[in-house]
Length: 129
Image 1 (cartoon, rainbow, N blue to C red):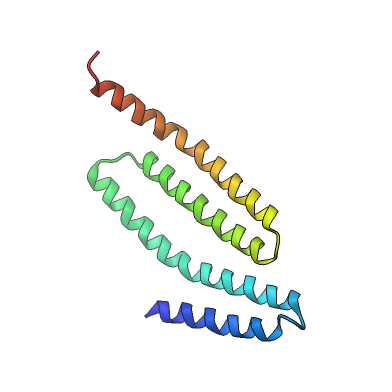
Image 2 (image 1 turned 90 degrees about the vertical axis):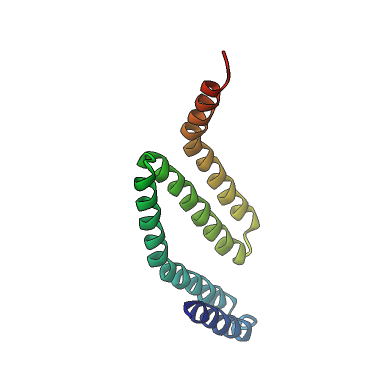
């Protein structure tokens, strides 16, 4: 039922924004940004419980925690980059939003290099010499 709260907040904010957007566009943007941040803060607790469960599963499966933490960082970068670029895009700054997305992609590639290396190393061990 938590989704009803999130959707309700989004709908109420959208209606308020549509009403005041023509007269006070800056105030409308602030309401939109504040609503986005409130929804994000609401989700942080849920994300924390998901991370805890993933850590338990990785530990029971014998997966090294460094790999899980790297993957979680990659997921975090993707979500934060998307969140930030959408707020900037809502403000009408498409160019800056694109740069935020590019930065997120580059940072993801940097974090993925060790995992890619291990995958290649594993494949090479499986292939006959």
